[in-house]
Image (cartoon, rainbow, N blue to C red):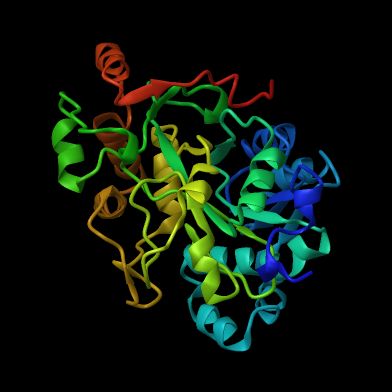
Length: 369
């Protein structure tokens, strides 16, 4: 079908066929819960690209056994096959960075899914997100209906706002059913004021989120669509940028400002990405042990990584690691307690009362209904 002529035949079905693509590593403890949840809220397919097949063999095997709608691709063993599906020039460009940069591998996996796996399964919409995130469809509780509404509005890309989990304790292995306190996205907060020892930390980075705050995106499955980053998709033709929906205030498409109509923008509803970036000091330590001493830019200097908590974690743990693993673990615990966790119950209560944060029932985020 010609996707550029308007809504696909999903507009005649009252629901869209939807899928998630994700690149995973170190997910033996969490992947099954993540898959169960997203199947329960109505996603039709989950395409899991395993970045460490040997280490994650148990979790991936259990996840793929849940349903034939969960497909696990051992991408580190088939990287050249994945790259061969991409346009030749882009494959050469990304191949240079795949060995060292996880973002390059994520882009390859998402692009391969858009070209190969999603069309082969009749998918209308493909959402790119991580395995430490849950999609919450909001008041439109059925995922297929939400994306059907986007389809009939004429949208071809959509960006959903993200919220960031604020752990209130240390030690959670599977955070989805434990953490209930979330920082609301910046576009929902008039003026953030932590009123605590963490105020300086948040002021330092210019945002009350410690990690990203620019949402995650889904795109209509159509020939020529491609990922611009782990947060953005680009439709197959220049006119597609005028069909970009979002519930993230101030979103801009980098080459030009997107021309979104209010009708399309409103169709994103209150759906959101619930992000659990680091659930414990052990998880924080493990994250940066895997990432290692990455540079200050992505793609060999083409994309700068701004001064951020992300870079400070790298620097702090690299210095501590020089003194040994025990020192690095101690540094991770200190970072977690001082910058990530909200261990003061009165602070958490005050932030919820002032609408800076919100409680979400963890059972609602791990069970459907």
